[in-house]
Length: 455
Image 1 (cartoon, rainbow, N blue to C red):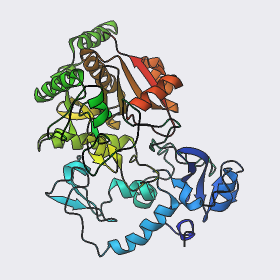
Image 2 (image 1 turned 45 degrees about the vertical axis):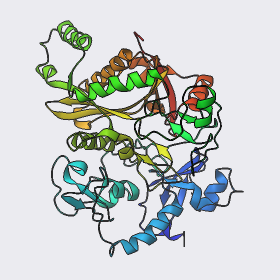
Image 3 (image 1 turned 90 degrees about the horizontal axis):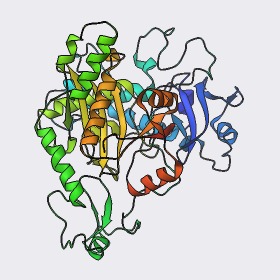
Image 4 (image 1 turned 180 degrees about the vertical axis):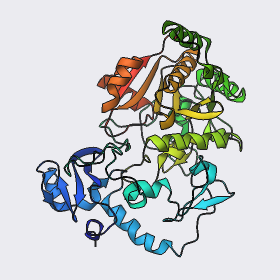
């Protein structure tokens, strides 16, 4: 039955496919004529042969380990196809798939998902039959779009051979590293009791997202917890102070650009003999925490989700490929064992329009991470990306954070290094960070870091 996925129209010819084991891409190819064009030999092969060419013939699970460009296995795609045959009779969702609230919703023409207009289509109400971004990225935009086939789209050049047409969009799949991630920050143990509070019960700091055993906290005389606190809990005075500072900044609303950035921009215009950009006075930035979002701020957060969706395909994990992590990261949710509650969202606005957005998580004074940052395509090349990054670095400097770490796509490494001063993070330090903090790791990226000046 699996064979129907490649034989049918679930995936268009040219759709990128990858053989992935434990988060590592072993071989790439693309679908053609009911088979796979293998990048190692440029021949049409079956999924089983593709698995053998990847050096994993002993696994004998080609459909479970061959993934589409958005992280969905062929097996899961087949399961979803079977389920979609029942979706026509299913009622549409009555909650927005992005912000999880009710209201005036529009429904996807292919799946049961529903969305607020402002959450899914901020540029206006779509005309005719409309498909959500999840379905577009799952089945390929060619199935739903009437775009010119000769255009250069999604990093794929028309007229190239099938192997060269492998999809190169900015898809990010949450990967796995060799180092064991997470665990109690004191003892390093992963065993937790959930049924009742014991010494083995886990508690997570509401600022740095680090995990602790209740017993380890008691033994180190950090905290003696008889019951889990109902309000926010912080592992140290440093995290408590940092959280209060960030809360004050969020309550203050929109902020002007830092004075040192404004002076830098004005000097830049003077050096080029041009007048000051009149738009500079209309640029602002704001900090949000999705976990504490109000009805008003959710509109801004939905704008951030749209910015990321315009620049990246949905972020997923191979074991849970039907789930897009972007809204959950922006809104600071806990989902399927992954806790994003400590994530903040910084948004840069120009003329009250959200043009750039970044997700940051601050792990105390030692390090902060920037897993996602992007600018709307129609606003790129105007300096907004640099302005937002400067605001984030200025905030971290004010909080005395020592270092900023981010996962960079290989093709973007030179940009981060040459333009923004980042360097490759050493493996030993990376392993140490990953053991101590729940940092986001993506396939096809390298970790870069940068010391924060003034901290």
